[in-house]
Amino acid sequence: MSEPKACVIGWPIKHSRSPVIHRFWLNALGIAGDYVLQPVEPDTVKAFFAGFRDSGYVGCNVTVPHKEAAFAAVDEMEPVAETLGALNTIWLEGGRLVGASTDSFGFLANLDGAAAGWHADPGAAVVLGAGGAARAIAWALLSRGFAPIHVVNRTPARAKALAERFGPSIRPAGWPDLPTLLPSARLLVNTTSLGMEGQPDLRVDVGALGDHALVNDLVYSPLETTLLANARSRGLAAVDGLGMLLHQAVPGFEHWFGTRPEVTPELRAAVLATLDDG
Ligand code: NAP
Image (cartoon, rainbow, N blue to C red; front, top):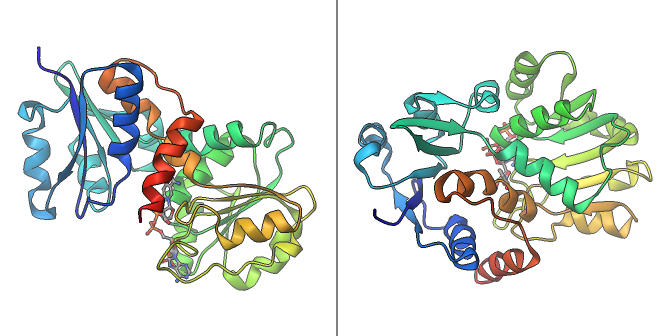
């Protein structure tokens, strides 16, 4: 039998860190296999999935702009993916394509690891952004008992769509509402691309948060965003987004290569080194 090989598909795809993560684990665990970048042009993605069983791949990760095509292509999916209407991980099971969404898992595992007890007394949360990542985070927070979850977004329709998907615990809001929402928030999560290298900075008055609020930024490049730096200098607990990227990769690796890998400081250092490379 040939060595198992998985891939990440997207267009463009060359900036994905996924090969670094999976190759690190393959190497550390002594598993013969590979994980590669697979560029797939938008007009060929349907054919790519139609031929997946004969592609030689045991599975793949899916990134922009192929998430919708992947959702339509799988034969079955895990309940979380169904709920979110999105997936990022696919594997073959008895010839059937199975899909999962691992972002919620990655988000929760990151906070569980970096801020133990963070959900012991859940209350209000503020989520900045209402895109694909925000959907996964809103679901994850609901699953841990947070309510209300204020979803602050530039485009009102996207925040409203989240409330329609998940119900009245999700409260759509706009940026001007933020100062009134921050004082009661136990948790502030940035799921926008603001603060990312090459994007405008994210300006939030962390002074308005309570003394026990936790701040999490999904942006991991730079690792220490202005939001996190400001939260830390105000004495708040703050968690970066790299851990989520690492943890969300765990279920896929286990499905493709048969061993559940661990997120370790060594893995984090290996991925960080590639971020420093730009
Ligand atoms: P997306 O679906 O494109 O959503 C982008 C969000 O950012 C939207 O809410 C958008 O608001 C907001 N936004 C973008 N530019 C803005 C601006 N100039 N002013 C105000 N709001 C702005 O993207 P996504 O997939 O949710 O990803 C969002 C971020 O999360 C990215 O930085 C991504 O790298 C990061 N992420 C990290 C992880 C991880 O593992 N750490 C996982 C997933 C995503 P509008 O709706 O108004 O456009």
